[in-house]
Length: 466
Image (cartoon, rainbow, N blue to C red; front, side, top):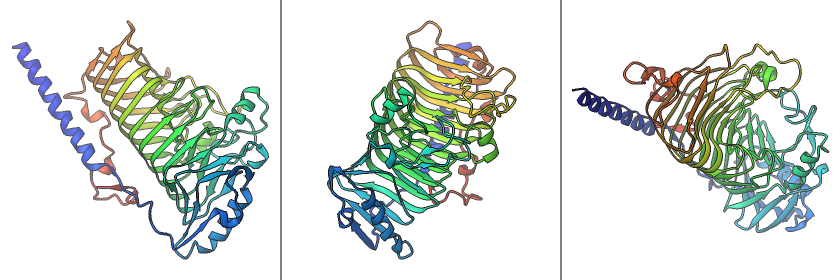
């Protein structure tokens, strides 16, 4: 009788969660974009004196071309075409209603002279440069307060030539924080697609304080030992869609952020409504998907599916610490395959680097409603290292249908967390052993509530479709 009951219970659980998967996949979609949208005005970078020999500095040519195209911003926008060649340049600004198009054999090369990357003010949500006090070098491709910006092409390449920056960083000879490869601030309607990004000096693609961002069909590469070369870092941004990307770098493939300690708390702009889909990649020392450690403005409504990470340190990591404040809630990660990953799931509450001495050590992060579902792994060293903060609340952590081939004798190590699990192998740690079904499935985050029904949801309609 007992075995018969167990079989019925198992079938009910499988049917229940199969229905949940259908509901998620049927309701949460990224809107398709038309990157081939015809701009009524178009110029080629060579019309402004650019020389694609890999030696001639073309910063002025890019700046002059974009200055010229700005006159068409209110006339349907414009397109700057970069043909085949190696186009060396320093930092340049984009404008609204612009398409930057790189031809198949076009390569934009970042200058290896730091003077060609101007120093700008630190982000208000960070209070200082991320690496050093004071300002920071501006990204190679930069824009702020923009609308309708497309960076795309026929799989052209943007190469930051970051090795010189990595060496300066290792030697501690920098005066300011290293630049990103692409950074857009306070902008909306951003599309980055069909390109290869190489060797960023620091984080590669950094949308900060942005809304309605799509990153599709990009490849991001940097040496596995290159310092802090994150792939895509949505930062205090909302309605972000990342799809069909391959990333192999020296740091986190994707890291979701929202400001640093007291500055992030005060600025109070969260990252939310973020979709990650069909992501493949690996790294040596970091994670596939990270949240934090700069998460003081809050992170919520993150949905990731169809993920494949291999030969990496960590699959998913939540990074936080005392003094961060903020929150991480409503995170749903499903359909994940891990091969040769040291730690499948890692909650690290010990990221204790702070911007200055003025942070509040009593500002504790709120961590709740994080669900992992349909995860398989081969050659995994540790299934989960889940460390909360004593006296804090890491709750409603839910593990569903997870099967990991673990090579160590202690697959789970948990402290200061609370949650539930169903169909997890190897058996999870004591704080998560209580079954999800039938009492606790409502405690587990499965669908962003505002996406279950289009009834009273207007925000985000540019990005999401039903």
